[in-house]
Length: 305
Image (cartoon, rainbow, N blue to C red):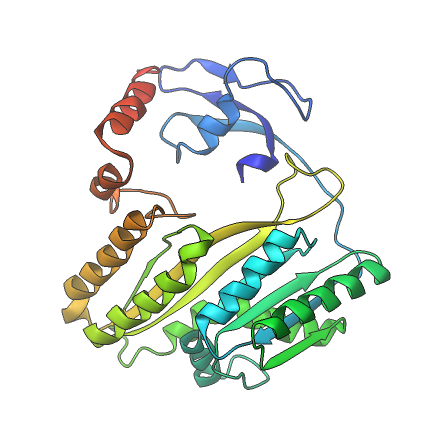
């Protein structure tokens, strides 16, 4: 999000009003207060005004999917696409359990192969999109892709990309009792460690006897700060873990979530790629960044007191 924010007007705890910067897209004037405030999870001030960057709507949208036998093959394909600099809008990874939940829920109009599957989104001129698709097809084939399909038809786009959006509701439909609990984590690791991390996550969820799945934000379009005219994929390595458990097993399930987050730290990752710390992860943040980093964060919050 921070890359889309040009400047903000913020009211601090002592009532003082701060404008973080002027409107140019590029500025080296002073500290980057906009990024600091965006990343502060609402703890430094109340935003009263924000100047945001805008971009054109994507043209000639197409989507695609590539199904593989293993998570490693899917992630290896993603790494090939990312390192090639290919201009793809988005790249998502759904595991077999996520696709099985979608099939179980009946929310999609089609049945999905329950295999590790990359979902891709393309846009641009007709020639550019066809080039993107061909390069993606070749990369997938190199890593043993079993199924590769694309479409520019609006209805088919909605079905294929809609599967990505249906994962959450589909997993909720796997509850065996209304009192069952839905728990999640959003750890992130270097993309080189993503396949190992996802397979390990599946194994500990299975050992604990829970229903669970992972969904990975493997790559995403480059931020506007880094690319003005050309979109290339950045490696994210961020994936969401979901667990369904009985209310009586909530503590046990949370211990599984904590194990996943600590494993991410061991792999030089983070306990949260998107959702933020909040109260639940506050103590574990110390494990990730260390006491001195926490002291510095607290010193920043003391500035407006």
